[in-house]
Image (cartoon, rainbow, N blue to C red):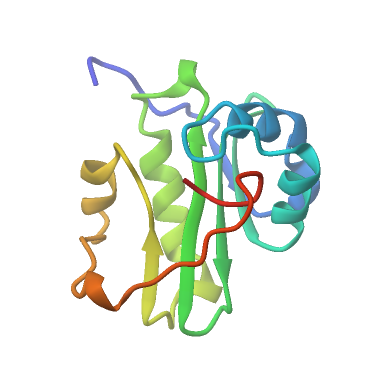
Length: 147
């Protein structure tokens, strides 16, 4: 981390009204997991998820959303930190806030998919699925499916 410090004014909020939808859409549509995702799909996904934004100096610098029944299951999706704030501890602060959220305390399963951040998530107790042969998926059009 080379001396990088968490912004002292970092704020994490679930207020959907604060989300910079343009920032989220622009990032996601160019990400490996949501490439080409339409703005309409991003807006719908935000409306139907528990969303977390991280803010510094009034600017959104990170995002994550949780798809959940707020009882037994959740799926962590669309996690990102804008490039200039990476390696400053923002992703860890965001994950701590997500895992501390009162609506997510009774979950039996909290899952996610990642291609390159296994080390980060392992620090928070995520591990490879125990019985992958039991998992199945139905894939839809590329605009709405996570890769």
